[in-house]
Amino acid sequence: MAQLAIVEAYEAFMSTAQPLINIDSDEQYNVVLKTLEQVLETATDSLDDPMNPLIDMLNQAIERYEAEDNELAAFIEEAEAIPTDIALLRTLMSQHQLTGSDLPEIGDKTMVSKVLNGKRLLSRQAIEKLSQRFGIRPAMFFDC
Image 1: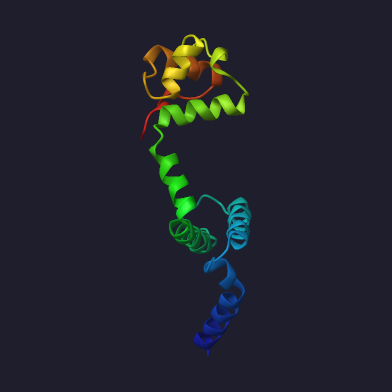
Image 2: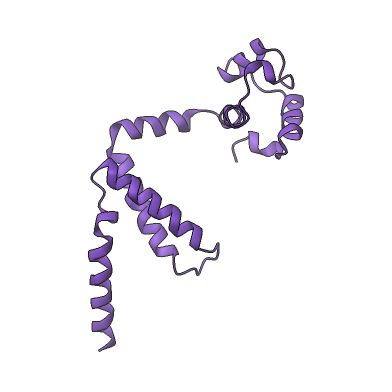
């Protein structure tokens, strides 16, 4: 009897969840992203949180859709190819509305441009100064 109730509950869940599991449009994709965000806000960080299977299910649906969308897959591939230090530096610059002239920790704007374009590496000293300025750990500038 209990087994039948589980099957019926699962079927009811799947009829509601189906549009979130099989994404076939950008509109559905955005709905699933928002749904995942809401679920993550309610979930705890424990391994036994009952929301974990739902989080995994939504995440897998998002990953499948992103892998099938050539434009999105190309964007993700390009973003993942950006070195960690440059990505972090660009993010900090964007968040704080900074230009190359606003980062004396690295050098002048020409030096900042060279770093952002991958022609020069951030020095240890620059990383330490940037870490202090933005209140972040120096390790964040490295792939882990």
